[in-house]
Length: 433
Image (cartoon, rainbow, N blue to C red; front, side):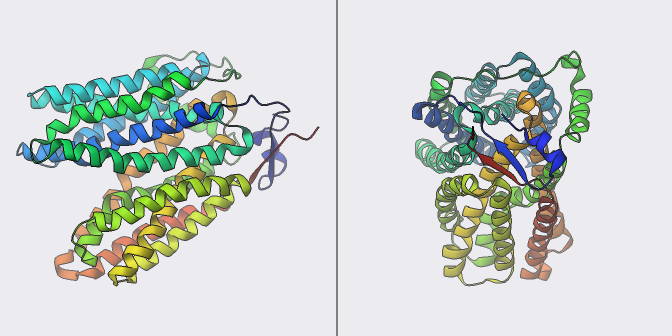
């Protein structure tokens, strides 16, 4: 590239031109579609195993909620320590795909074990390892984005992946639910693993990594250095103009967005009065699929920073409406779809902006930190929501308790929005000779 975002940011921290190389390798539609299809595949695991059937099976066994919540926390902790280390190792090796394939197969294999065992301890252990595989594979998947896109269409391709991800959540759940029927929810594990494998295969077979610079030989990396490598990566992110501020902003608004994913269905049925969560989640998911793709185009036409500003302003409107709208029709066909568009567009633009800000030779390492902030936000957000409703018992305070809980999410978005205003505005342009 003629101008790196880091170098340009030194001169103009809020107006950066990221110029595409004079010649960029053409990417086949098959490679683009295969990469995006992996988003479809891994979301099947996220929805079916993490969100629905594993917690459901744990409760079917007569165990407490802690039996699925604590293992997930343990998995997230391990992933938090491994992500930057593994990203740095992939940068050093100059390859992403072997890591993506390896951790994906680890996830799929352990999910199959979950479907075969009748030992609870083995079931939970396999779930922890499968979750580690799933979460870690995301680092290398995200870092492959520049291999399936050109500098000026990162947003479009990222949006395609996010949109297919939401489609995978709906499609995978629909298929496996019908296979399980009214029987044991353990029956969902192997079909979910097989669907993950089938839709991940095209990415493994048809995506070809581009040659790219390797990370400089700064220090030898070993497995035992997990914690120190993570801390060192965070410190070194401060040297990349705008990157640390973007990550902090991303933490705050991701805190709110991760909570919406968990709480929207409960809020719709408990407060608004819908019979099932699907009455709201259906329109929201369809809108997320469409919005992800559309905002990929918006991100490329404007900038990722400007696209995120639009998305976060939509979230402010969604949270304000959720606090005060009581009409079911308005909530179902206006509030929920706008939330879906905002959700898809935020992930699309944020992933693109992370690629823009990161030095190409260290993309895997910094993608590890990006995913790390998302994991911590995924822990804090639900805790903030649950803690608010614990202090303000809805049985006592009624709707007011939920209004305050939504207000805390609104505050998180506003903080993230304000921080985001001070990140670099990177304009990607075609090479001009």
